[in-house]
Length: 118
Image 1 (spheres, helix red, strand yellow):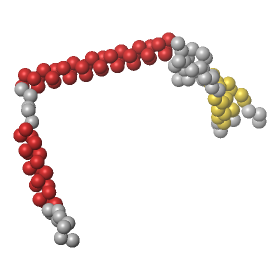
Image 2 (cartoon, rainbow, N blue to C red):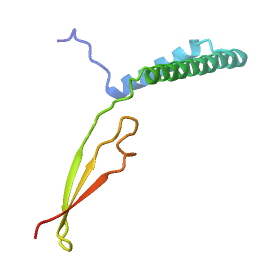
Image 3 (cartoon, rainbow, N blue to C red):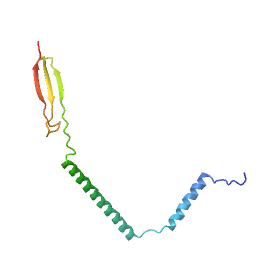
Image 4 (cartoon, rainbow, N blue to C red):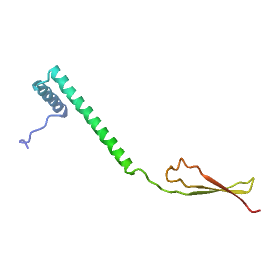
């Protein structure tokens, strides 16, 4: 059991790590101010070019998909609603079916009024 080395306590190990980091930072060759500005400018230009390129690709692909009709989904829906009124004892049936060129929100419902039998 005497051969086994005992670890230093946690605070000493943390202090040794900070000391190692400080010594390593002394060995670092830091860039000059001019080199730092030059490298930063290159990075910013590359980021801007990539952003412009990706935006152009995205817009171009969207335009192509729109032209080939990928986004045009002509789903015909019919909604029938029956409303009974207490005052007039009439039944109102509303049928809504959008035409091919208009969306559901643009189509106006057609109303049919049927008097109820008394």
